[in-house]
Length: 179
Image (cartoon, one colour):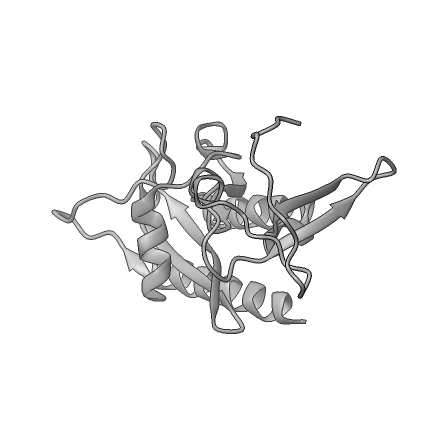
């Protein structure tokens, strides 16, 4: 653990203010859920909560199944990171931070579909695959992530069936996170 040198007092309601510099560095926004951990040594650890993290390996298996049936690279992300991916793009995008443009797309709460001549949407900050089709995952009114098909060198075309599949999976994940 790294010391910041910042000390805060608890107010009479039991609250502690997380300094703006730390919130900015860790990309913690107003209304972001935080998970609270304690250890045997009396330390309190705050961690950004991601509902996607609750699914663990199931998201990887879901991406693998989608890839096997469509031959399209598939990725699922929360609001900050790619949490699962399958296909040739897996190593390029897996467990990497997503771009601000991808975050903005999710905040629109509308699907994104790449059309020829349109500016490409990158999923991750490093060189990775561009998004061909993406649906935001909205849980209880809040954007919790997105699912996307990604461009690779030998892409199959996005068909109506592929689009319907991605939309259905986004709705399924939305519903399961509300439970």
